[in-house]
Image (cartoon, rainbow, N blue to C red; front, top):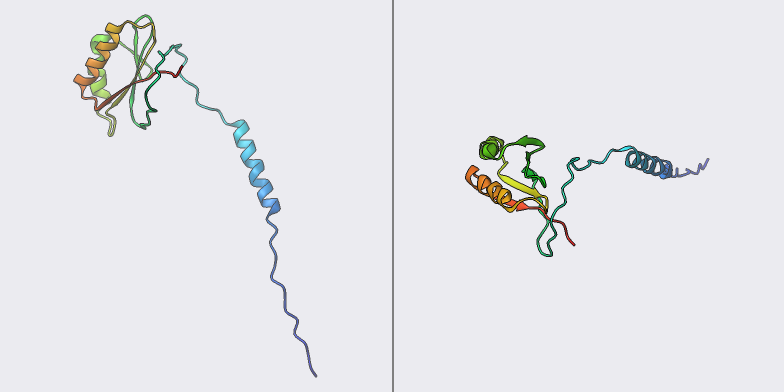
Length: 133
């Protein structure tokens, strides 16, 4: 007796349903996620034609509003205590950078005092944030 052996074809896995589910999950998470919004303080940044994007993960943010009030990482701080507050923030590992967001109507004297306090506290870098025209 001569038996022919039939070769079995390999199982073919259909990936189309899996890809559909992955895309549905992607769309679901994109639509339901909450994007981080900026602080609710209304700061109108000055314009600048030159500059570069600042990409630092660990930084201290100092905001100067039009009336000259200061916020350090969202907390209100008096100008006299700014240097002490920045020194305390610099104790965290890797935090030595300051981002200054000053309203375009803020007094120059307050902004200069913030820069001076940051340098005295030991800031390695100070970025002044602006918006492009």
